[in-house]
Image (cartoon, rainbow, N blue to C red; front, side, top):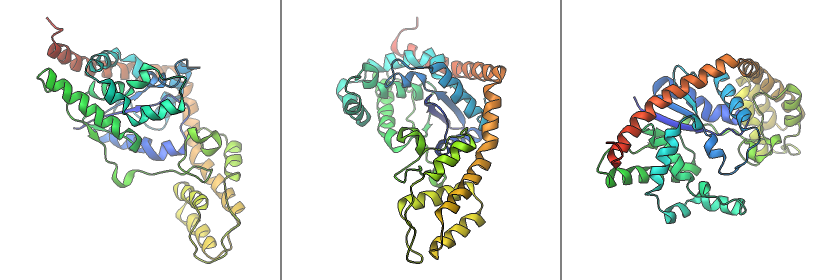
Length: 330
């Protein structure tokens, strides 16, 4: 059974992009692999060193993932800061990570441009902490996006370097988890790209958005004056609406509006009203489940306790061998 590790940022609420993207893949992975999913509260400090309501954000993210189907009995779902072994391995890997290679990381250079007044050491060594998250469980597969592929390559570098320096084979070479055709890109409502909180609150439909908020967001979505030529190609903004329709509506509904577009009789207001109804119908049961989980303090405490215990058991084995390889153990 493959060991899979993936982080979840405690940056707030889940949206449809998260649900149809990483989350559905997580649900599939927990059935077939040994999975470690952690809420990356350490990582959040690299860009927000004095976070507001970090504890509440972590609780919200935990509740939402539990409500959507992550099962603490099938996977290991834990909070990053509950695992001090990660910080220890991070320290040890830093001893053999070179400043030059860290400064060449694309994400570091991007962050330096984006936040010139907060170029901290944690930001520089972010790839080392990510490597520690992966190597602490000796993962063989890691679900990563294009922006994280370089970090995964650096993880292999750090693990192989440790093995070579200390003449051991503790750390395997993790590879990217290939989702194949399962990876779905969910468009945002602004007509430009993917759905995400960083693109603005109005760009994303969150799973616990009230119906009134969903209606306001969808009705404001970018459109045009409509097609004038039958079977013409849809502009990006219109294609985005149809992509959302395909995700949450019936095939019959999708075909109906697609036919209307192709014969130039479409009314975008009607399409948007139908899209609102179908999104609300899709998200309402999930939203109710999230509220129920958030209010169940016993369930949340058990999930945290279970995840912490399982993560500790895995990390302790790794650190026992790591300390021995370096020469700390007597």
